[in-house]
Length: 384
Image (cartoon, rainbow, N blue to C red; front, side, top):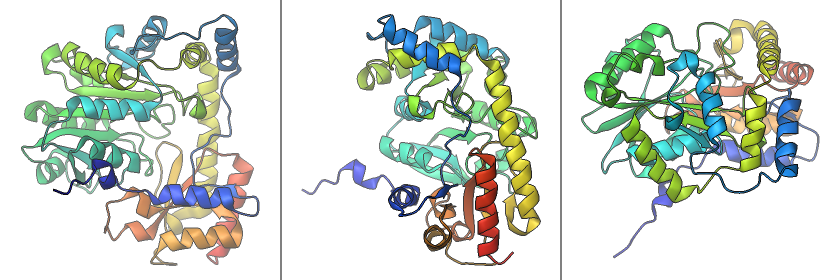
């Protein structure tokens, strides 16, 4: 009997290939293919990390993380339903948090609904559970409920929403979040709300779907909220995130997954995160820096190239259909010809989707003048 390992079904992402090509490029590259912030982590976090090591805070914590950090994070989520501290989980980045949540809700034959425009790791994480993915074209003019009814089934166990979105920069409206929540509660489907870019909303309001759960008895609540220190606090390499579970039962199942896979998050990094929470000025300055870069890039490119104007987040999608029918090859050629790293749309859409080879994604969080130079080179390369 032949057995195929589940890991063979995890789809590879062409984004990693672009990243490797940039790393091996023989000349300096303007890196617009990856979300690495120019604004570095706050000094408070640096000192918190170093102080933790000097003071000997290097032993294990529990699988859920430091109690003091739980309380501080609960306070930070005061406008997002303020979950009890014992339903907050500190994680090695929001990626691990989402993966653990997926494991905790996985059922044989289950399905998870993802936005059609999605971050590829979300798709990979669903695949690792053995569940299937259904892709939903949110934002196509229909109501959220109509989109879900068209693509979900009786096997659907969760819907993932990412607002502001990567790669789209789309910010879900309050009405859309209400529609999603109402549908999920009615169908007894979990919602995983990836709010990695919550500190970078320029048009609209932050995603606060967990707040809608408060109108329900705890046993009927459906929202997992996922957050990270990587974006607002610029702690990408520290790998620190956190998640809140909707009720005690879901928290208990998530605890089982974390105890089985994690043991504990990094202790010094948790102290760095605790210190970072005391640096609100960093968040404001970081958001404003990226917003100004967004405005400059959007003004430079205009309607000719924009696929959609980003209302939030770190990225903008460009439509290059007037210039190429294969943006995957285009990105590799542009790297070779103009020393600019760009991410192909094929990495963010389901296989075979015809839109994929029209789009590229560029980052907005890098150093502004370098970003604008990369945009200038790209525009000149396209003959604009």
